[in-house]
Image (cartoon, rainbow, N blue to C red; front, side, top):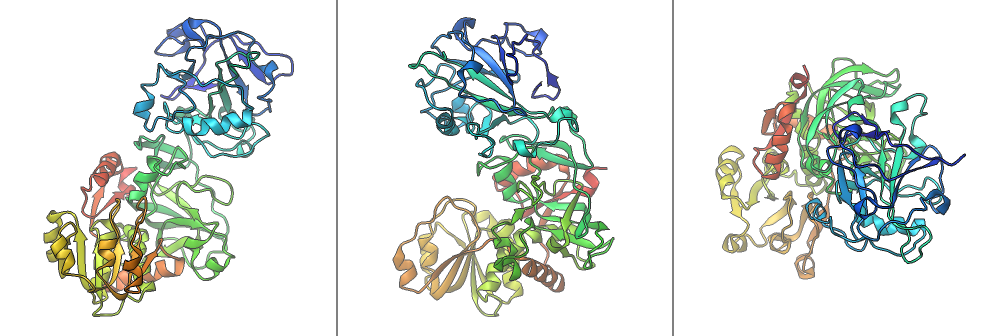
Length: 558
């Protein structure tokens, strides 16, 4: 069954020919019809002018041999550009030696010629991997070995979750989730100079078949646009806590993964890892929480619980750490985050929010707060009188300033935006505000800082900041620039350290939450409803937020 990008199943009503015992169905080139097959445009054949070629549909619940040329049409297609049908539009195949860097470039490739040359199937997949990525709204899913020749799947990005073949439920249990691969055969089987080129897409269920016990908003493709979505949360196990989510902070990580900026997004993707809510159910073995408790969930929801890092409460560095969204949990399911009505988590990864601390203020602590708190504590920056530099004054940076002031530090903020000066000084109470491009101001601060925490999202130089550290000073990078380049002299001559840090372990997170409650440290937030999220993410990219968006989940799904 094919699926329309708008939702329902799409039946092409094309007669097929199937060899006895052959799982591959060889379909003649579809006729150029419009309304009958539900497509907006006529469907061309694989060959030019509607001549030759074939479309082959294979049921992945069986195991065809893609190198078996008996499975291919014996028709002789033209050597001009082949086409593949993308649910409701036509897509050209571009050279496998050229990889358009953006979808916009790919959309202009309608006159590209197809790369020729016979290759084994496994070699062909390797060649096509860069081609598929972000080309014509098709992308590569995770590379997995299912059987000998078929080890790369791609899918249409408007379709529901991609899952490996061996994790598919039995068809009888969920018949709508049977998965098919469509292949465009654009060359003759018996012409070595042409060979075969395959374009593959794995298709799962129609969007209008979504159902489940959890309401959410999800991104379905790298456009990053979110829309309503339903799915099933697991039932509560003996060590689990289920909480009704009341609020969820909006982190730049939500932008990165909804837009597939790390090339590993699994759609539909429900983001959100700054979660606050109220316990509604606990497992039989849970001792730390009870129904009605206020709790938070941060950036990860599982780990091995048995390695050196886990035993030292550094679960964030466990090699089997499971992220709150877009991760693969121990049961093989894809995790979905806090842009949803409830979540089920093992009690180890839940954190008690003290009575009286507002849940909407607690949510950003679970990522923004712990991300800057951890390196400050690790490098002893809780000692009054020390000097702290903070690069960037956004969601993370403003929390670093708040912790610095609570620790009794002298705080200097570095920013590219003069417009932030007034709030940095009068709202947050920093001693110094420096425009980082002002070389005179930067020069005046050389050898003056004990510690710098770098929260800036974009690429930026590091040497100018390292030069500001005292002898033995530390610069901790909690952001993800595309690269870090430093002159060794800026490290060696001052015995300075450039360090990394990533969120925090469970012990540190609970300590940080308790510290914020005791010291009345509250993030600066802007509360939004769920249906504003696409605009909020756009504003986040445009740096138009003070200082953290928090979604009012509880009142968004009533």
